[in-house]
Image (cartoon, rainbow over the protein chains, first blue to last red):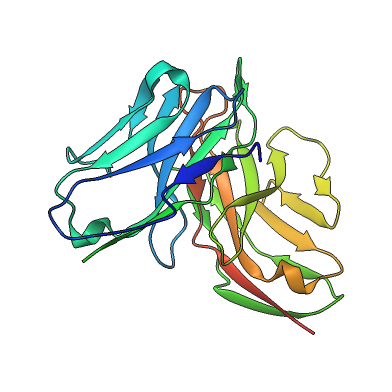
Amino acid sequence: DTGVSQDPRHKITKRGQNVTFRCDPISEHNRLYWYRQTLGQGPEFLTYFQNEAQLEKSRLLSDRFSAERPKGSFSTLEIQRTEQGDSAMYLCASSLGVRGGDYEQYFGPGTRLTVT
Amino acid sequence: AQKITQTQPGMFVQEKEAVTLDCTYDTSDPSYGLFWYKQPSSGEMIFLIYQGSYDQQNATEGRYSLNFQKARKSANLVISASQLGDSAMYFCAMRETPGGATNKLIFGTGTLLAVQP
């Protein structure tokens, strides 16, 4: 399978704990995005990497959230001191960015986080 | 600010019939991209079709076509010959500022399509 993969698929954690999610993009894709989707809503943008550089962060990404993409390959999204409001589906997407434009984003299966 | 509006929370269609899912958008940027994604109950977002703001013709991909009416700022998805496997949530999305720094997607709230046998 050469698509975007995410791990874990499901995570249940207690409030106050830290969690980390991993995303492996399609290998030749240089752009990587994280989105968050709550029940009944469309995905909302969290952050974006071009290669290893994090170029934009949404206001949704509080200081409890941190994302990395070392070496421009896989990415991790960490949430510290989780809150119940963090319960959501976290989606990763990748694309092949080209000069002046961007191809469609391909999404992974998501990580569903439940904070109890 | 850019915005996507999907006014149909849910739709029913009989198998083998065509269905249109509505999407309107708002942007002041003359250059933009519009996408439709399908999200089955498994959760993965599946890319269906893309329309660029400067494209002269409506986009088509197999049974999917995009009815792009620029003056009305609408980008409706038409699914022909519906199949039971088409039952899913469908999201319309806009790419912010093609060529800009991010190219993040802005999504609507989605339409839940149920195909009945």
